[in-house]
Amino acid sequence: MGSIMKKLIIATSNPHKVEEIESVLGQIGIACVALGDAGIPEPEEDGATFEANARIKAIAYAKALGATVLADDSGLEVDALGGRPGVHSARFAGIGATREQRDAANNARLLRELDGVADAQRGARFVCVLCVASPDGTIAAQARGHFEGRIGHTLRGANGFGYDPLLVLEDGRTSAELSSQEKNARSHRGNALRTLVTLLGRA
Image (cartoon, rainbow, N blue to C red; front, side, top):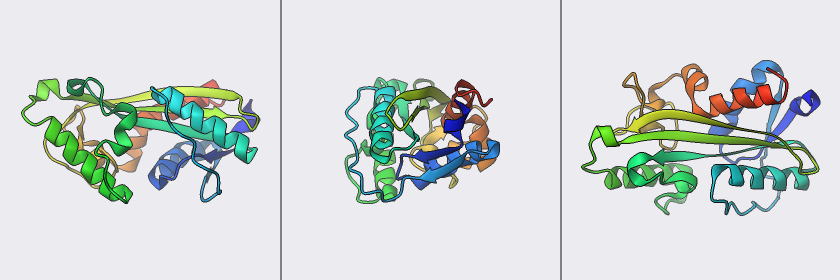
């Protein structure tokens, strides 16, 4: 099983995700390669859960590339919104031509929807599901991680992306105010990665 972990293609176009994954897996000698422009049609992520979407991506890219692929599906669950935006986190607002524009629009919509909601009801968490698929499409491992907090009232911090500037942690800082090292040690993606490594016998 360990041999599949020597090199992984990371099935995402988000460079921030690749950096976070590589910062953890690179420490144990796993080479992470970004998907890049492989000319492969992006599979439709029509699953109802993070697990389903991660599996869809991992299997599709692994078969198309004939390589071992790590796919991730992640997002934000907000208690006061019944778990939304959930699997629709990346395009919650439905507008924005660039990642930065989409992030800004998504955060603005989230703040609007929570306007007037008290802090005690603003509980939320980032969720990350990682799925590794072998070249034949077999699922080698799957792991889930969480990062708990609450939604703040203003954006704070520059070391992050997406909803990071709005997720306030127990110590009062937002996810975007953590150093990269702190974030990897505590985040949903870091937690999922450590579980994944254990599942693959590389703890």
